Image 1 (cartoon, one colour):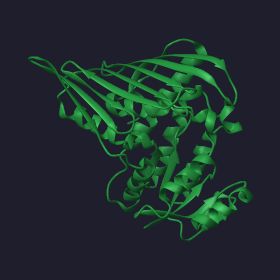
Image 2 (image 1 turned 45 degrees about the vertical axis):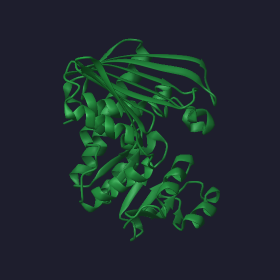
Image 3 (image 1 turned 30 degrees about the vertical axis):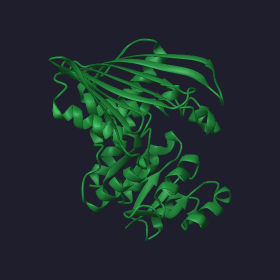
Image 4 (image 1 turned 135 degrees about the vertical axis):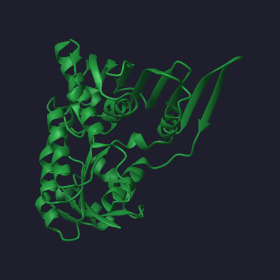
Length: 331
């Protein structure tokens, strides 16, 4: 059992604790860090972990073997690098960073100390996405030509915190909460991006935003792509991979539809799989990486490339022009 600390006990930090504490057979939280301890004392007692106000106190706790970070986005680099200097594996919530240079520095800090680094992209572990990747890897789709993704989620309205409306914390509007998950899928499925052209339209800002992000992609391998993100619409998830022999589509958490060319037309297979707790799954994978059982499924290069895409989207939105990316995003 890995004993971990969690830094940040807001809405999402509590979600993480609720998913892990007493449920994982591989990891548990023994220490929590909050700058507003009075608001979470009862929660800490309920979940049976020590509460403090600083990362230094958590790192000084001899029980702590690893650290999870669930704080505002702009704080991630300093915290990850501090954990790496202390020689402890680190799990960092998405978006891992807001700039590709920061993401690269963070992964390099951990790699320099030979420490596992993990990012909280829990949609990567959904049964629908696992099945989609299996179909793509099997080769039945033929030559991959195009990827599409859409993630709408009204959580930004339902679980609003003032810091989430700051341009310094949430550039790209819905990209930090929803679109970043699609970018993670694209990075694994199609690799580094060569060009991005993004559009942002807002009809209402603030605590109850109405806005959309639309992005066109050209990947270095010649694959094209499209991403859509809406912050005000009820939950909807779709990742669709198209080849010259068929396509595979992940819908929501548990459904996957494969359509293949067939002499008599085409063949369709619809799989519905049991739901899992994806937060529990990603932390169990992190625990396996800490123990040396298996590497974390999201590589450091994929982490950096995802943030390179994210940064390019924010630049394209600001300039209203396409952004070109080089091949040197990450190795």
